[in-house]
Image (cartoon, rainbow, N blue to C red; front, side, top):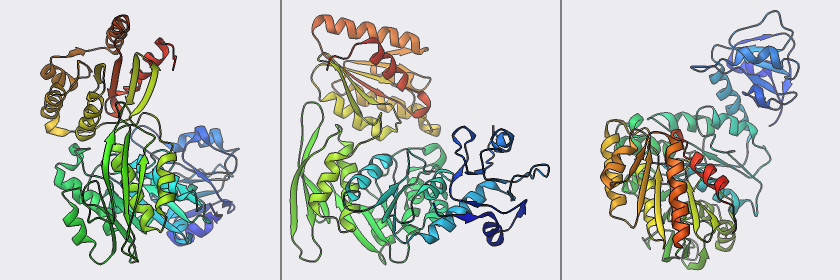
Length: 464
């Protein structure tokens, strides 16, 4: 980031400067990863207080933003009432200096995959910065903005929400030039209360667009008419997996036995009115990656990227781990690691995909979190869904997943060690019979289902 001074921040936003002023060009909120010369923000949370770590890092940092002044220290300090607000304010100062375009991405699932795909495509021709990992909340978005380079052409910023108002708050900081809602699903419904409230919350990303902003709209979503009306004064680009009236759409969708998809990408040129078509095979398995690719492609199309550059970006994207990741351990053992997170709709997509594979299909699930009063009913619904598919075994872990297991007539476990033991026995039994085990591992982040992936990959030597 460009250099700022504590005094300039205090002059604009208030607060008090203790000790000599200092210039800073990098910030941190984590004492464990602090770099020499960073400005440290002492963020407070329910179980932690960043102020407690300042004595241990005082010799490294150039200064600190605090709400508890330490008058005995020579460290430059900006004393404010709220260090979280101060972090936001510094990010706003940085955003004001950025002359490129900021792309904001939200949705119930696939946000990180869409962000990474946009980056993959645009980065062929432009200088692009992106959210690192999934830093997409009130702390993560300011940190992402502050880490980005001002001389970039594009910033791609991921935005998450767990209640109405979250996206609005993030857009006030980011001021997006391009905005996209990837999808609407039953995620974080405990905080939102209803699917209708999820639509309202996600739609805040369009309301946050700059006056010349571009709204990218998914015509496959039920809320698309509402979004079209909401953005009637803005530039609109549309995409769809089936509607040929969209600016960008897919056709001739085909999947192989391992769940890898090929389709025709159709892009309508607005000036000439002609439609260009390219056939593309995606590098990652799973139907959801088709939709995520269309989202990213629509963003890039709206920014003038050619269809050939878009296709190259879709083919070469490197996605983070545990997003429907195929791990082929041996000819008779395939793990599908979708353990990063889950909601009911992404769960069904994953089960649909695994059920199309030949072999002995095993579903290993943890709880789906933040479903509120509907949690038990939704888990029963998922059990019914899996029961109707080509799934030979369901193994569950967690208080809520037992309801899915009961409907499926699967095996429920109270302890992960017991589940792992039985799963390994089943894999060995199938290997002895010459049966291939296709194992889908799915659950919310809080279920920590990556433990299953880790144990199976440790226990069975990789031969593929």
